[in-house]
Image (cartoon, rainbow over all chains, first blue to last red; front, side):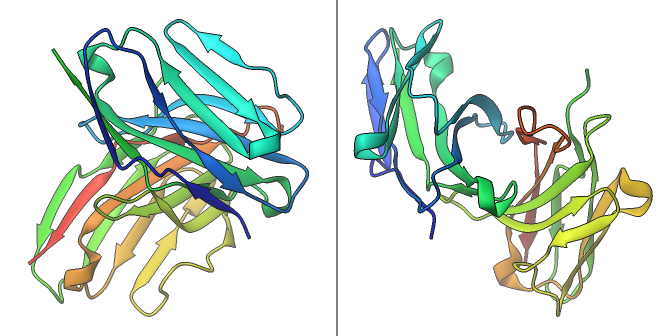
Amino acid sequence: AQKVTQAQTEISVVEKEDVTLDCVYETRDTTYYLFWYKQPPSGELVFLIRRNSFDEQNEISGRYSWNFQKSTSSFNFTITASQVVDSAVYFCALSEYSSASKIIFGSGTRLSIRP
Amino acid sequence: EAGVVQSPRYKIIEKKQPVAFWCNPISGHNTLYWYLQNLGQGPELLIRYENEEAVDDSQLPKDRFSAERLKGVDSTLKIQPAELGDSAVYLCASSDDRDSSTDTQYFGPGTRLTVL
């Protein structure tokens, strides 16, 4: 069975600090996809990144970076030099190739950036 | 390019009343999803359509929930009758599943339902 765990329910940091959001997943498939979505107060889920299980390269996009480690089944997300606009709920998600597009979401981490 | 459109954004009804939500997916996306998101939780899939066909409705409470996607574009999700526990955000998403490299799901802003 597939499962996504985001142990950090809420995180609060001061602006310009770096912050890492943890994500641990469980799956029996060898082919799967991992995602991060951002949900600002407006409610819309905004797609941030998708990685497949065969690509363990870390990725950097501006102030965002992702660390994918299959050995620990983790897909952590780091925001460097955080800004108030980064305040949102962030969801990690997993889709198994065998489940045909069915995404399982974690429970989310609420990130608050204080000015 | 326009994103996923949902209406209404907010809906308040009394229990036992019917309610309907509408979704217009991203143009060209063949797959459409309805999710339920309870407060403090991640979205949970209710139903998935590939074109007009509901290919996964295993999580849809069929005694009171129904959905349709006529012509394989817009979709409507209905609850009749609504119960207090149905208060939640209903999210619609779409994707282009004809290519596994592009089948990322994109979400609409959701409809926040309050049942009194």
